[in-house]
Length: 298
Image (cartoon, rainbow, N blue to C red; front, side, top):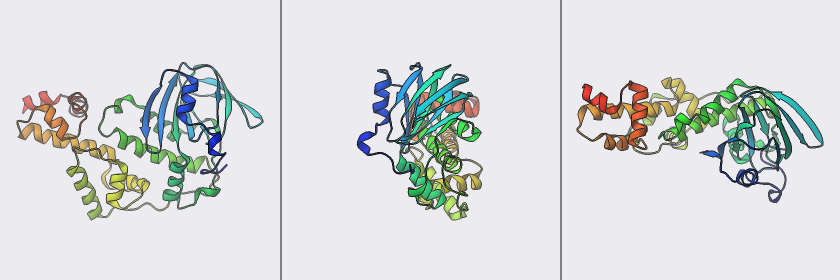
């Protein structure tokens, strides 16, 4: 089964349809570019998973467990470590049985989204490239990226979507390198940001601090793919785009706290924070004091 092909669409289920069959209580869900991130707990130890129209990665949480997978005329059993990963390509359906903690997170990604990474990062056509199913796969980078995307501290941050989409780009690149039939795969040579391009990116960020800035926005300004934007921006600045944007918001907020009489809630909004509470949390994390305490200390 190729990265972009599979069974007829009328035989496939969406993640939402599957979720409705599992539980009547909607699980915690976060949108990402081309998919969604969903955390599960308390579901049954035996689960029938229909063929899906998304690829998905399962991050095993809660502790070690034994997982049995039945499907495609075969049975496979594995002792699965905490934070290991299971990969299921779109179109594959299995019966799962878990002995141990039933807690996990799923990252669902459309085949089209993975195809874009294959084209943009590896300069290949995805038609002849297949994902390889994995059970209890140990990859520290994939695990760390999934855990970062799940971090509840991101919730409410104005740059949460940018951060998660940047990590998703890195994760899908790793997935193509480690879990597909692409031979001798390696990303194309990374782009080096010209000083003029970097200045243009910084100016765009500064001019849009009060708005939601996406990875596609920055890639468009630089004229690069999302992957190469992330890599080259970090090489040039020492920070990924979402971290630079957060720092720029906080720098602007400090200037306004020092040089204006604007109320804190107005400064929060002007600098792109979702709420005064979210602004206070981010500011305290970076400065060790709240915005109000910072202003009083000047």
